[in-house]
Image (cartoon, rainbow, N blue to C red; front, side):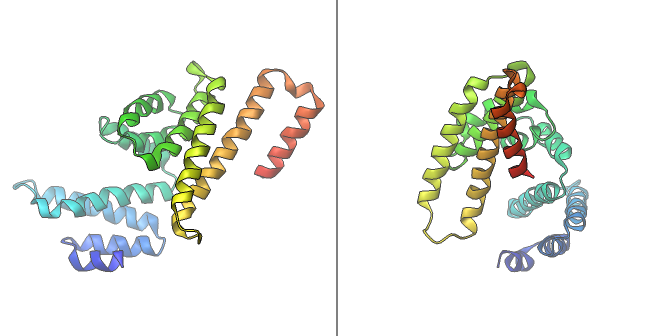
Length: 216
């Protein structure tokens, strides 16, 4: 329905083509078409300002170019794009900085995102802060990770209870979030054990092997 509506209302033919590629899972072709549309719009508006009625289409290009980049695993590109916006979209940097270990940018974006974070994103924000507290070599705070994990778990459960009983697409992001919370908790256990010399203890070795087997 969304694709059909945009096919009818789009001003640029590239929009319709890019959406068609994206709907078929051809993300590389879709991304190239979105880039072509952006360049064409720049050329088109070199001599005159863009009318406000076309702004939603420009926003669509940006959002779905980012989606294609995520599907293609272009984390560094997304991180650089987020930082180039000068704090206009700290959530984009947050979602990608940890994947390329840009901890300084992630810390700055976390501070910027907190006052404008919606309730629905709060669990995700605490999860990402947990990554930061565990992995940032300059400010590692293992004692804070457990509290962040607990907060993220409680918030995700509250969000789950707001949804209908029948599991549908709306539940998928929360299921993925819950899995990442579990992985962060297990990673914290491994990290703490290694720091305390647990590698030489048989119970710790057994626990680590079990976690690795589950991940595999």
